[in-house]
Image (cartoon, rainbow, N blue to C red; front, side):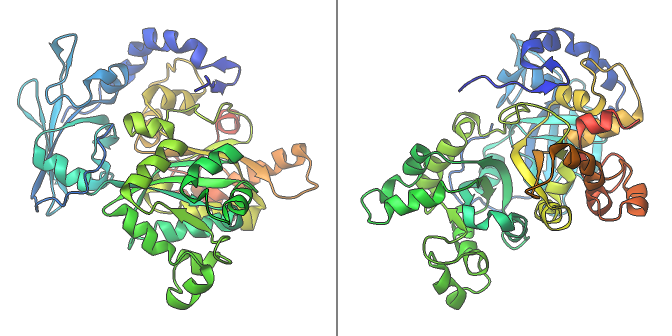
Length: 442
């Protein structure tokens, strides 16, 4: 794959990666005083009922600097053991207990952790527990592996060109609780003819193949990696019959009934088997086939500019991504011209929070912001205007009214229709981080 660069201001991240590696310990000293209290593919095997799930977790900075410790039940670097935690998740009441390996003492007494759900605990994922960022590196036993992976079957979904104008509404349908599906990957694409032919390879001898390829390459599509129990079947059921006209009769609440037109222009695609899901995900998310992990910042994002934002993890976790995209289109006459789900490590998060190559500030505010940024996937977007005659300079001015003030409370007073007013919670969980705008807001 070609090397792509994320540029922060005038700094090339790829070009300075060696510097980041050498000096990253300086950055991580900022987190030393916090409280000391890629995943295998799903087998589809139904797990036994379990009361406890057990994991091995390490500090995020350790996982970031030493990827080779993943899947180690007792993590070691160059043969030397590193401090880790034994995390137990109690299924019946959704509580967590953590034991520190170094001294065997309880770091966290059994208690509920609001920001951590069962679905967040899988190899390679990072979570925030008592203001400490930890990464899951291994399952402690076969029962945990089976229970977790049975709930993480993967499937490929795609919103087709005809439904992209209603993208927010389609995503809102997808994230409804009844489906129990999680968006594990998202990428806005303009498919080439070769990609479309490959995606629909099984139909190449059918008479409609040429028109299908022409249709699917007629505009942008949204590729999605979905996970959840029985994801393939659940998404196919949510789609409804292939023919949208039939769907409106037999499955009126299905996605194709609501957003499709006919048998070909039918809003969305879904893998029809686990094998098909693997093939299609490998085509649209090549990195998934290797590690089943999200790309780090810079994959297709390439540049951070004045119209770039990150949709923060709390929006995605709460299922409000669809509503946010709908608001952008219907209330602000704008939409993402680029979009990709990404995961920030501590270095990325600190740079995005401060705009500094090696942040020196040490404050509770900075820690809160970084904790949000690393607490789950973010969505990188670059906004564009839907007004055909709007000059780029005019949209850049309008951009600040779209996102609103950093503090959602103030936004709800002075910019009631802004994204932060509608979806923000507080100054650290304020729906969007728009780097160049936020860095220069003062």
